[in-house]
Length: 299
Ligand code: FE
Image (cartoon, rainbow, N blue to C red; front, side, top):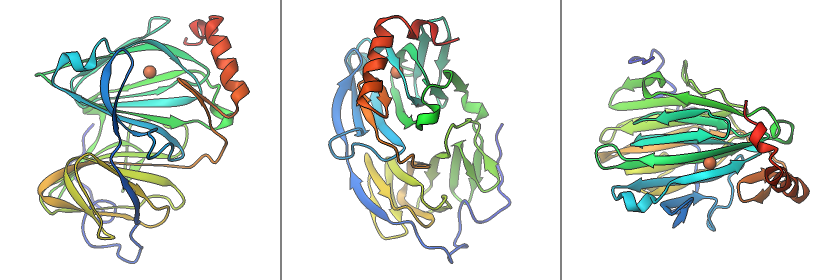
């Protein structure tokens, strides 16, 4: 489903809604080059020394490569428990399989929203289209009461993601709500995931619930925030917790992810692919994995 119109001025572009404050940018970070899985070169932005966590977000990776050797043998069979992974492919394919035979292929512009819950074992294999693999993986934490829910997959094809087009701005609403437009992803906690294309110097305004954490990640061009901060390509801007996001695209246009979510405010215990509340729960996850409990977890 695509929508090419927006009847409300607020919530997308324009100068209206100025009575609300601008959500400030509190820091800008670059992330680090690293590799994961079986030799996949990637950039880790959240989950890095500069930004360990932005509650509820545990990790953000960007993988962008035109050299198949740079993504090696992908991410072979590995487990997860206690959170969700959201993979958004700008370019290229991402083939996933799990231990009980679920299989899916993400193609250009599509999203996989996976709830690991009590346990998933899966493999994730990037594949080029037209010589390029480019995408993002975001990890969203789950609160204690949802960490052991049934695992679930949502494969969302590109043409199921609504696009709002107005005044030089195109916004894909992947999750959450912008104006009257709701994204297709079913989220376990409150979350907003937008992909915003601003043609030269066009404006964008998005209300975000007060108290939510959020960030901008500019993956092409640059944007200027309403607080006067310019954010360039490959930089992540952490947003304050109050006010509306206001952006103006750089003169040559820009592409930016805007992601926000409801903080969970619980202790975080990380152990590689498991994210729980306590060390004991992480050790239990390793034990369950070794004992084959995860093999039966996905149904
Ligand atoms: Fe994974």
